[in-house]
Length: 235
Figure 1: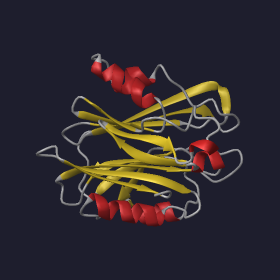
Figure 2: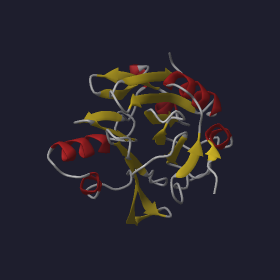
Figure 3: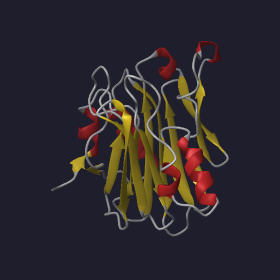
Figure 4: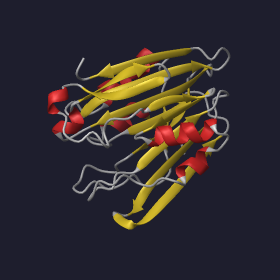
């Protein structure tokens, strides 16, 4: 089966929620990371991405409007040695700390489950990019909205194909309650030559009202040099 065009896939979905893309650029020279957040509530929309020493964090754009920070303020991207962890919640720190202790991606996520936000029980999606461009993805979700059962899925990609990536996001459809993502991470294609180009394409494809922030990074597979772009609705 051929990969899906990334822009077409995103433009057809008004609310995929939060999403992680890991893959390889078309020239086969850079590993690619993208992470976006969307929101429907005022609290969720009141956020920006800002750079940190080892990645990025979410921060309230208007501190006076912040109500509950527990599930919206976290570090989506952090370095773990030479690897890069990207997630949609505070499990970023769980994974990073476990890796630095000599543990594994899988071990870290076996200590976590979906988010405690009924009735959606938002999945926790996570990724780990290795220096050689191989990567892992995971989703932890409830059993069709039943919080009595936590489901853990792990996916590993040893040799990503040039111009392709795997996209996983939190919600399958824009419904109420929000249904969890289903199936394997989507195989998507993109031709953007650099981080800015891909960031522009993803940003333009996301729903105008619901999109909040986007992070894109191209990491040179030879030198490790990182070309990073952050876009925020609240600039």
